[in-house]
Length: 377
Picture 1 (cartoon, one colour):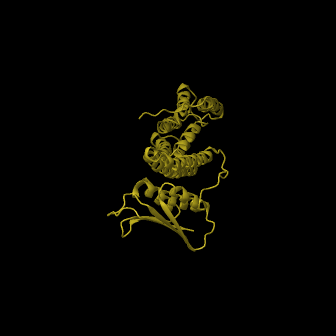
Picture 2 (cartoon, rainbow, N blue to C red):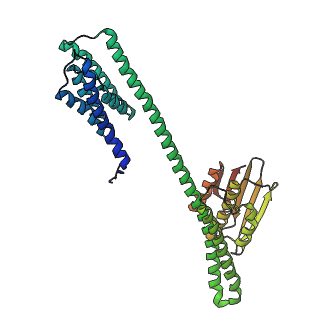
């Protein structure tokens, strides 16, 4: 898979060129100016200018090839010093290269560059028999190199922390986006599956009665109309929440257990006799838990209508001190073995798990299906 790099902006290109050019001019002019008072040093010549330009102009590639640029500045600076050219701003290119290389994470190369220049300068002077430096001057130069390396390390650590924080924020955004996509998918599945199941059952009934007993097909067609209308209302509510550009709370009321009677009556119109039993004192629930409880009951009844071939179902709701317990039973055909879990049961379990609860789907002794959900309050 090919990747395309974003071309640098005009401002970035100007800054990339400006630093090497400005440093080259400053190094050459500054060295010639500093050489006037250094009669004991080698006279400036063309080779000196070439060394200065190599170190300065190589910084143009510092961001893309930091390690080759580092060694170019190390070698040009070392040769400059061993040739005893005048002291001046020659070391600036090396300082910038080492600092940037370490800050970008190439720590070993940066420290090797520092050690190479220091050891090469001190050892080279001894080998070539150049004026020996005092021990204090040697230690001072070594200390300055160590300070440069540790400052670069501090900036590198800061850069790493900033990049790690940015990655963490990005991962958190992706995680939240994934959770939101899952929640929306669950909402759409529950809404569409429930209403389409009711429409399918009523449509089958209407087709069966339209020729034999046309007068009895009217209630089925009316149920289809109501179910499709309610499906559109709920879908518009979900889409309306998605279209809200701000972070304000949804304007539509959240569907909860207070809509359970309406859900039961709508399901009964599909031919399923539903009984509701409530234990404990009903009370307001947190919005997320209330919605999840309603969707679990809705999806359970949808599964009964679609798959159980049952004539009745019982919805038990127990309001406890620590948790809300939902139990949905049907009187479907006697079956053996564990129930097959499709999108419906797995979606209900994900809703319960997201709230720190549990959901089980088991066979009763008679072979019918029992859904039990425990949701912590």
